[in-house]
Length: 260
Image (cartoon, rainbow, N blue to C red; front, top):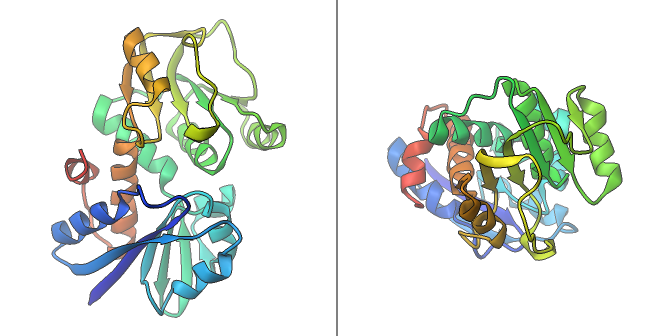
């Protein structure tokens, strides 16, 4: 079979997903192609129409994660719970959806830092689709608490209502073991200093990789935190996607080499 893969979202020209797809195909001993599809949030019908005609499977990025979930005939448990997808697959005449962002994020921290989630205190900046997936995966991984700091009160409240150990404010007396920035780069306000509770023992992750070293990430790197951009999360969630598509066991660390 010649696999027809791709990534859909907007903006999409910077996406490294096609490069990951081609690396995954090679590692799996499969053949195929991968394309970028520039689609806005209001183009759900165009997204659905791609399946069966132009693509067999897609990675899904912003702003289509929630839209994609509404288009699928079947969703995995995490996608049903969170209402977002990061991957879509056309199989047996049905459109299947799954979200791997959260699990990929957790995988990347284990792979890159051997991060111990038990009893960890985490801070997540933002409350959009990626934040929802990451918060859910952190809770499943066993963190003690997650503080979600977002500008849209309704989105923060929704996350707080889902889990007992998720709060919508900082707990000032707790050290921050992990801080994750999920907010769009274009909407950020420049930070003058690191957040209270962050130390040189904190792992700081910016899930964007364009730019590779955002001002937020540079601030935390210069402070002395163990820091990483979004390339590792991208590679490890891509491994989960392709393992789902092809029923294999690809390693996220191998895929990360293809884009580092």
